[in-house]
Image 1 (cartoon, rainbow, N blue to C red):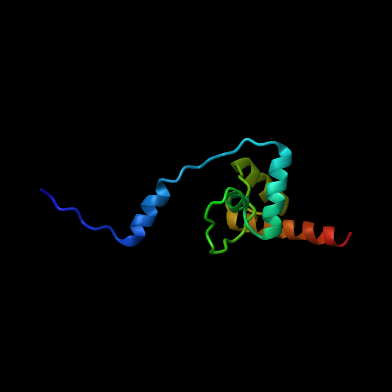
Image 2: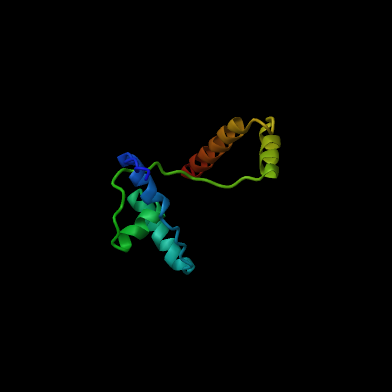
Length: 111
């Protein structure tokens, strides 16, 4: 009979995390807007705000808040053309897109 090796502690945590199930709530626009606004005001992501509201444990370690979108090949091609870049240079496209977002916010501040 083969003996089982003891798993390292960090693997136990990964095993537990892999058992987590993503749950999506189909809520009205007002509920979603309020929760997102509350999360933004608290500097947390909406998932953490939902966990707070439900009385669940929230990871105390702050997470880096990011904005993200999904881009198709045609989106990269369009942005590359807009920015005068090679469509294969995704790092530069991302950098220029980020600069455009910052410029957008800066222009809003000046109004």
